[in-house]
Length: 334
Length: 285
Image 1 (tube, rainbow over the protein chains, first blue to last red):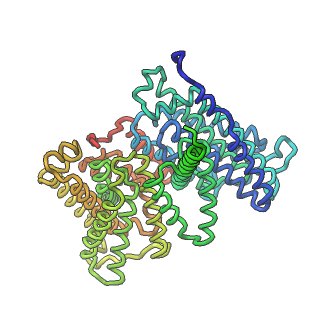
Image 2 (tube, chains in turn cyan, blue):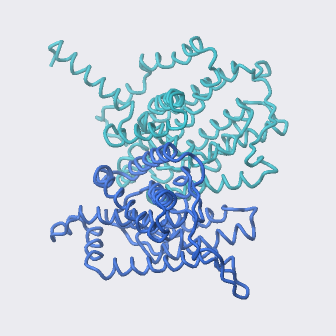
Image 3 (tube, helix red, strand yellow):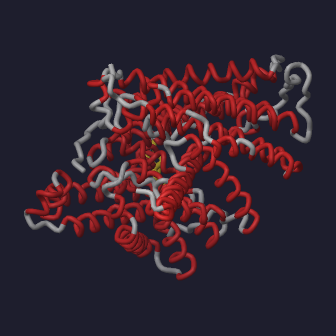
């Protein structure tokens, strides 16, 4: 119970949508107009952003370190892919099923993951992802193995909008799902539940004293994060109508971690911005030095870990503070 | 029997490489995912010395270890030491970024193809015993592995250096108070870990192959050894490597359809049952 004098206005205020946020969500619409030729790439960006968001929920908010988040992405992708290739092509229910599959896996593995310390968590998440990779790799009759899963038939969205070659439908579909899930995540992290997660991240020892069941909360957010990742995977499967085995690799989990840190973990926009910066940098650097762009990526990450732990969001926040201080000095206010 | 022998040999190789990680991760409590990159560096140094300079193979091995140790000291002094107090997540990210850079740099320098390695005459061929074919090189690997294990064990448990190291790990502030140069000690330890990685990498070229993807391909195995053996425990690492090697080779030989699944499953079960590993000891930092 909160004491009556506790001031909630700041928490309430942070829940309200700011102008900058509204403007931010105009960006995809702008991108649709400005880059009509790269809708496929943009769709890919949305999906990766959703995936990154799912990691942000468990790592940035709850502080669960994971090196195997690709497991859930892969499970979602294969679930949706298998449904679609066996005649169940309706996309929305496919998403739902994929999300549920990933969530079930997330819940089951959360029981394993939550037992240990950071290092054990790293290893267990990694181990789970590698196990799934091996399963998908070896069960060629079901998953297609190294060749990937193809032959999907995805029905038109709402029975009307066909997934076309230019990626028009896919663009709006992915954007809508991303926004909807982002909206839910935003609600979630500003709810008492989300606040308690941050409390657990900051001081897991004290939270039980405040009446927060630590393990239950962590298991819950891990499950939610898994579901998000599964939906991202399903989106990928449905929009590209192909599932590659590489959906489950260690590289994907590691890259995802990079994106999140690049953007700044522990903030939803950090996940989105990190994905944006990462993919743009990938695109730009890969054009300049197609084979060695990873070197610059590594250097960038190194700099962030050593000098700018907050990532892009941290930088923005710092800038905002500077501007505020300047304007205060200029206006002569106290 | 041959399968068992090959398993032990590949386990020894794993031990050679991952015992270095066990040292850094277990004794210094630093999650160094870039350990595979050091092993790769050792491999490349060995290949270059052997193929372009024509040095004998046995001379290349210690040189590879020395070169990696030097790299380790350099990186430790400039970068790693800033992150000793950081969270595991930061350490993971930091070492992943090193891995990316190392992979791109090797790719740039040597191309993406596998590096060839000619073993000298006396390490090639096989012994034939009834029911057992022993590759000479594998026998050599096992011998070296055993020697290193013994040497390390003596180093940590019997020498002044070992005692200081254990003290510094258990309580760095107290150790400092007793006049132990903890920083220098950690640098040396890190150099030792890197040297072992380099040696293992150089010896592993023949069995594991060597290309820029090496650090990512095998880092999981190294981590498994350390996690299962209990970090910081040399005997544990040895046992875990041997079990892993035998299970891996036997699994691939007898039940190829499940492949590496078995190993990961064993690891996860192990970690859940005994999070600190088989012979875990608590690191204080």
